[in-house]
Amino acid sequence: MALLTLSEGKEHLRIPQGEDDHNSDIVAKIDEASDLVVKHCNLTPDPGWNDGSAPVPGNVKAAACVVLTYLYERRGETMTVSADIWQAVERVLVATRVSAMA
View 1 (tube, rainbow, N blue to C red):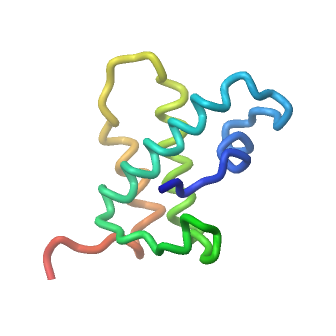
View 2 (cartoon, rainbow, N blue to C red):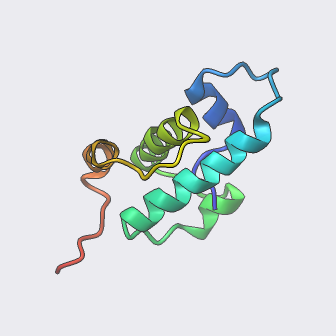
View 3 (tube, rainbow, N blue to C red):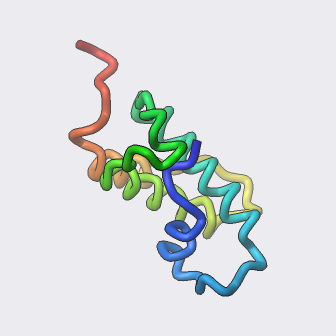
């Protein structure tokens, strides 16, 4: 389940659409970023996000972009996603995140 299209990911990363050498890596990072955001926020993705019949909310896309950039810029490194990234994600998702406590 990807929160961004390849085109959106490339645009965010400022990779020209004609440069296709790293498309498979970008798609993999989009999938990883999407999974991390969905799990971190306890989101239940709308099935329409997958087939394009329902738009992904802008703040959810923005969160995926934050994580995508982090993963793409640090590819090949052994790492964990830093607390700074999650703070940035929290700022863009403040109204979306489902609280663990009711």
